[in-house]
Image 1 (cartoon, helix red, strand yellow):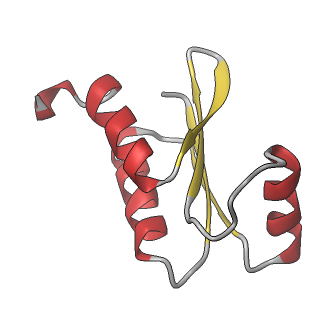
Image 2 (image 1 turned 90 degrees about the horizontal axis):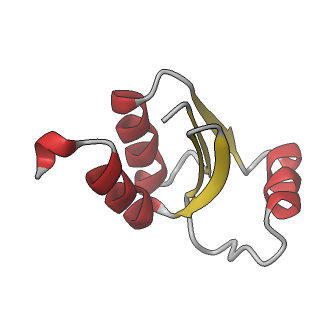
Length: 88
């Protein structure tokens, strides 16, 4: 995993958890607080049909390709199956 981008808000426990998990397996982690208009607008531009009531929203760059993973649960599953073989 080359890069992880987490869009979330400061009061969100799942957002903090996603950032912590990402930092444990990736050197390039970016957190974007969507309470700031520029990151909120950027998130809406990245995925037009985004459900803004769910947080966080996570993108991963892996193998040179960037893709939307989903929220905390989907990111945890992605990490479990692709990044952390010791968890098996």
